[in-house]
Length: 264
Image (cartoon, rainbow, N blue to C red; front, side):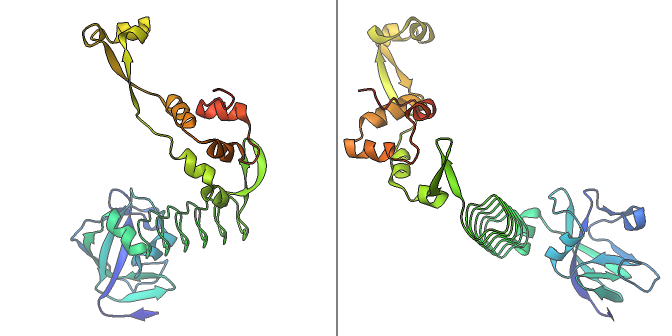
């Protein structure tokens, strides 16, 4: 379809502002106007562009290294589907990548393309926080899923997860909703403990010579030490919630958290 008149659109370029029609580099610059004495025809001759920014990436990789510009078609325009070309084009301005992400997504905080959901790094998702594509569920790394937390494709049922290296009957959503997860998330971090000089090891004394004057030093506990303090502060009922996690294995639990459930 051919038409005349000013048409606003978008165009993607290589990182050096070139395009390669028919394998021959053509140099553009922001603010420039370019004209050819031809009758434009899509995929044959003329300067190509798309009226919708998202459509550009049917033909170019969605890559932040590429340049993207707002353009005006000032001459005759030929359109075929989502692609157009003109015999006179103006490169109006560069579109920063952050602005482009807002243009091509209706969802919020997306780094992918054409998402109506929020915080997606994949493309064409109506769900949220997907790294895969075309998902209406949430947090999928696979594609075309109507469930959540799937790393496969074309699934309507959320997968069961492994717990302690074995299959379980829990989905990841079950885990998110569990009291055990809530309790484990209460393990503190960056806990300080004052170590008196009389309790310091020779290595600690060498690392903290000031302790001879101060009488000790403040030690930042590591994750396993923090976890042990947390465990000792739990009630018997709360400890039972943790050990009731499906497939609970005390050796694996100790290896990961540092907690010996059999210790006093």
